[in-house]
Image (cartoon, rainbow, N blue to C red; front, side, top):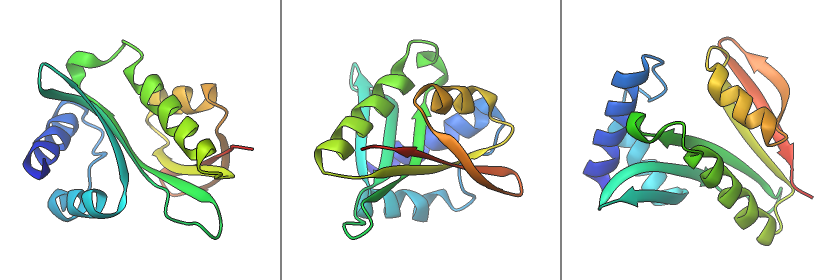
Length: 136
């Protein structure tokens, strides 16, 4: 699974031109696989999309969306929205109060999706917006 995720993320970066994947993609994927909840979506055995989020802050009940990635061939089909909705439902079931993320200010498409789901900008840092959604 590790190699599959690394190749998938490198392809996403190559196809979008946004540099959404960290330079050190291998340690990033290792961290996700070890610590994050990942919901993959495959079609015909091929990874088309996934969402990865951290839901291990039991004291604060704040989750953090680390990555929502959809292959170029699967975009425009609502897959990102389905994955985001699934993660929100799982977090609500676990009693989480909030869901945070960071997104590139230049990633208009992602920002529109997050807005649609009720995420609000709570700050900014350089090229990034910090957004949060209340889950209760």
